[in-house]
Amino acid sequence: MPLEGEYEPSPEDWVRDQVERYEATDGREAGTLGDTGLPVVIFTTRGNKSGKLRKTPLMRVEHDGAYLLVASKGGAPSHPVWYHNLRADPSALEVQDGADRFDATARELDGDERAEWWERAVAAYPPYAEYQRKTDRRIPVLLAERR
Ligand SMILES: C[C@H](OP(=O)(O)OC[C@@H](O)[C@@H](O)[C@@H](O)Cn1c2nc(=O)[nH]c(=O)c-2cc2ccc(O)cc21)C(=O)N[C@@H](CCC(=O)N[C@@H](CCC(=O)O)C(=O)O)C(=O)O
Image (cartoon, rainbow, N blue to C red; front, side, top):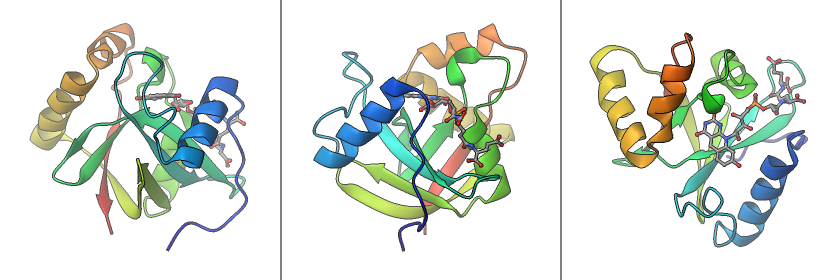
């Protein structure tokens, strides 16, 4: 059941535009990160303070139908706020991969499972390794599993 509520676009123009074009074309347009050719996926969460719907493009890291959310934010010292939204309500999550949209539940990974998925993340988007080197915070990774 798609998440209900008022959508509040990102304050970042490039993010807002990517979401808009991706959703309008099921990812045929704006389906990659700039001209890297690397695919992105749109995750919808619920603002843990506003209750509004927030849409966040992230790099596509998929395996056996599960999708990884990497809270890298370019190696910034603080977590992206969508991470706090998912910590507050892990089941308020919708995934759009191209034309495929589905409800999911997120769980934060640790230990061997995290290591295995981190390898997949870096293989899909090598700059993640650089981002982790750039910051003391351990970049959280969460697995979105279809409900
Ligand atoms: C700018 C900020 O965004 P953020 O949630 O911190 O997320 C920062 C980024 O991670 C996010 O912009 C990503 O989409 C950037 N990004 C990636 N970000 C990543 O972290 N990892 C990626 O792999 C990644 C890939 C990517 C590809 C394409 C693209 O266009 C963007 C990409 C934001 O939206 N802030 C809002 C608030 C958003 C929000 O959720 N508010 C909550 C409260 C949150 C709180 O304060 O706890 C609420 O509504 O209640 C605002 O300032 O008004």
